[in-house]
Length: 145
Image (tube, rainbow, N blue to C red):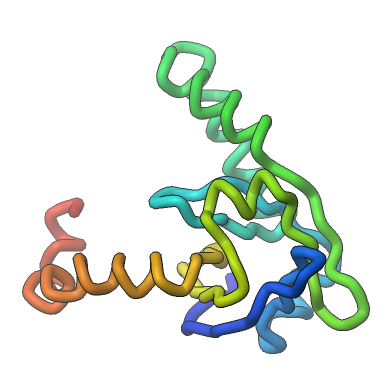
């Protein structure tokens, strides 16, 4: 499994297009799924990774009302994309509004997917959480976070 890592700062153009980081374009050449992510970000998954997430949501939704809500929201807010020849994807107005995206964006690798953030929102998020990350270190992983 390839991991998505790093921080990138592409700009959103006037047509709502965002250029994916060059190092990830081959991974997404066959298509990708864009959906609403946590903390007012957008999540970008490879199609096969999204299929695994969807299967887990379907299984959980059979018995759990909260999981049904998650499944419905996930399905309703996901769009399939195929990057163009320049590695750009077009973010819908609903997605841009949800994530408060303007021109300045940040794309971060989050292990199994990418996240797209408004640059100021990412800076604010890091300001809020950087200290707890530096204090917690990797010990928090052993405690199940």
